[in-house]
Each structure stands twice: as structure tokens, then as C-alpha cells.
Image 1 (cartoon, rainbow, N blue to C red):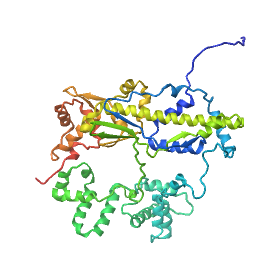
Image 2 (tube, rainbow, N blue to C red):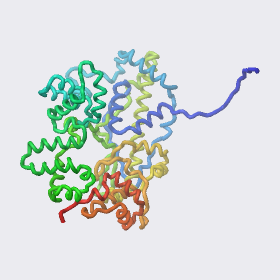
Image 3 (tube, rainbow, N blue to C red):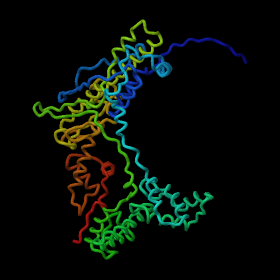
Amino acid sequence: MRFDASQHMRLNQQMKLAPRMIQSMEILQMPFAALQERIEQELESNVALEEASPVVETQTTNDGPDEQPLDDQELVVGENTPDGAEDFERLSTLESSMPDSFENQYSSAQRPRSGEDRDRKMDAMANVQARSESLQEQLLQQWTFAEVTPEVGALGERLIGYLENDGLFHTSEADMLTDLAALPELKVTPELITEAIEALQHWLDPPGLAARTVKECLLIQVDSQDRNDPQHGFGWQDVRLLINSHFEDLLENRLPRISEESDLSMERIQAAIELMHRLKLSPGRELVSEQVPPIIPDIVVEYDEQADVYTARMSDGTLPNVQVSSDYEDMAKDKEVEKETRRFVTDSVRRASWLIDAINQRKHTMLRVVGVVLSRQRDFFDQGKQHLKPLPMIEVADQLNIHVGTVSRAVAEKWIATPRGVLPLRMFFSGGTETKSGEQMSWGAVKETLKEIVEEEDKQSPLSDEAIVKELKARGIDIARRTVVKYRQQLDIPPARRRRVFTDN
């Protein structure tokens, strides 16, 4: 066996994404709220970036997208591009170690003195709502007023930690016993756990908390309503009977069977079901509601009656309009400034310029994409969802001469405010089918037609899935039964047997 050492030369090509291109793609994909936060962070960290007077950009579209493209090469050519993350880390270190180096005639970001304009960020932070108490924190506070034995009180505190956000136990008593048996300060027995759970159900508010099943949760609420609402006492007795003895039949809408087995008239059953609407399946959410982030549209579409066109504009009124500081640009060119400082300022100016270019490119790309939407989906804006047409992203990309991935990033998590409401921009991009008349119809329009058919059906004799297929076919839409089932489930429409409304006749 012989080992030889040798040298070889090989020529190959590699494609690497420059930091500028990566930043451009990230900015394009960001929804409005994320972009606003990103700009605020850059304003704090980049000394060369400053706010300027706002500019509103508008585009009119019924004739298609704006045909004034920016220089797309600007996004991918990395002239004077740093080699990698190492340079950015060095800049950050230099900035933190030299905070006073820029307090001179070039500084445009002086802190406001007392009596000058207040800091908007500090005012915003002062107005932020304080963190609300969790469900467990609120229940523990309630539990301190419970009149129970010390053993039940101590165990109750532990059991509150097992409650889920809906206020119910999803852990069995056997599992609780296994977990709590190792605690030396408590002598936990099955009987003590049952006693503590019943005490929690009695002392905690709203009624229904600490139930072990949905059925038990509803029955606890019925008992509370029966005590506090005597005028419906007879009705609440019927509700208790339905939940206690006919719960499964009730879920499957088998009302005739319930009437036959319980000797209740259909009128009394319907009245009891109406009373059930007061009950809560998740009483814990009455104390702590999930925080849903606000929807801020990126694009606003308006109708110009005089010109009979729809116009689109960016809804960036609250978005900071930023620019590169002229003082720092001059400082970057000043040969008298210390070399390291000038290099830092030059890199800061470059980063600020990249960010501004990426934001402008985002606006331009989104307006061009929305221009295609308004041109293609004019019938939707005029007549509604049933007139939504298929619009594949690849078709938009070909029309705008951009990559399909760019279109996907432009519409991802974006919302558009239209005369027909605030809608996800993604809904306008889907496949579809062709009707018998040759008209193109998107799958969203098919769903809307299916929904309309169900709304118009005879509730005492609802349409089966096969009957819906025939009704759609009569309207020129030929789809399979399994597709109807899929769309019905996506629209949260129950099957025919659960949609049926019963009467005494």
C-alpha cells in the first residue's frame, strides 16, 4: 500500500446569496406589523438612518400593473458587499464600544432636551396594557376565599395547576393521584381528590370550572341556572334531562328518538336546545380570552366612481418613512475623520441604503402584484365572491417577469382592505374549474356557491352531499362528491342529518 500527496485545480461555480439580497427577500415577506417593528429596530441601532416626511404611493389599476419597473439588478448585485456576518458583528461591537464618537457636528440623532418633542416610543410603551392575570392566578385568588379544610385547600391549589385554558380537567384522577402521591406534605387519596374537585366546582366562578368532562361542565351550569333563573325552571329540567340521558343523540341531532324515549314534545325539545345556547363549553375562556393580534392591511383598494376604476395604494401611513442621514453621508466622505470611525459610518450608511431600497422594492412589487389582481378579479370586486376567477401565482410571475417565489413572498401573510372587507391577499391566488358555459371559476367561488346552496335548502329536508353535487352540476359546476365533502368540512357545515330541523308535524 502506497500513499501519494498531490495537488489538483478544479474550476466550479457556486451561487451564494449576498446579505443585501437576503434582506430584500425578508423585507418583502414581512407583513405590515413586522415591517414596522423592523424599521423601528433599525432606527434605534443604525445611526445613519433617520425619519423623513411621509410619502404616499398610489397605483391605478384596471388596465393592468404599472409598467415602470425598478432596476431589478439592484436587488442581487452586491457591490461593496461585506464578506459575511463577521463584518456585521464587528460593526455592532464597534457601535456599542464607541457610543460617543458621533456626538459631533455630523450627528443628526441628538436626544431631545427637556421641553422638546417627547419620545414617541416611550409614550407608546407607557400606554401598553399591563399583562393580564392567567387563569390559574385568578382561580388561586378565588380559592383563598373557599371555606374548606386545610387538606382540601392545599390539594385544591395543586389541582388548579391541572386545569387547561378552557377551565376543564383533561388529566384523569388516576394520573393526578400518581403525580401527587410523591408529595410528602400531602397524603393524597382518591377520595380526597374527588372531594377537592367537587369543592373547586362549588367555589370557583363562573360555573362549570373544574369539570372532568364537557357533559359534567354543562350539568354544573344547568344546576346554577336552575337556582338563579326560576322562571325557566321547567325548561332547565328539560335541559338537564337531555344532557344527562340523551347527550349522544343530542350531538347527532336525533331529536325524534329523544322525543320517543323521553316523552317530550318536539316543541319542548327545541325550547330546551334554545336554552342550551346560554351554556359555555369552555368557561375558563370567560376569564382569560386569547389575544388575537390585530389585522393591519398592507394594501388599500378603493373604487373611483367617476373613472370607474379600482385603485390600490400602500397603507403605510403609520409606517416610519426613513432616509439616509445626509450628515452621516458627509461624514463617510470626510477624510479628516478617523479611519475606523469612517469605516463604521460607511457601513452604517450602506446598511441604511439597503434597507430603504428593500422597502421601496417591497412597495413596488406588491403594487404590481395587486395590479394584476385588480385587473383579473374585477368581477369579484363588482359582484362578490362567487365571481372569483382562478389566478395561479405562476401566471402572475410570467406576466410581471419575476420569479414565482417573489410573488409568493409578496402575498404571504398580507391583508388587503377592499370595498368588500379586509381580506387575505392569498385568497385571490388559487386554481379553479371551468363551468359548462366556459367561464373560469376559482375554488373559492365554488365554495361560496356551495355555501349559498346550503343556506337556501329546506331545513326540514336538507340536501345530502350527493344532492349538493347535482345542484352544483345544474349551475354548471361539475365536481366530485368527495370534493363537496371536503369543501363542506372546510366551511364548517355539518352533514345533512345534523342540519335537519324537526317539528311536531
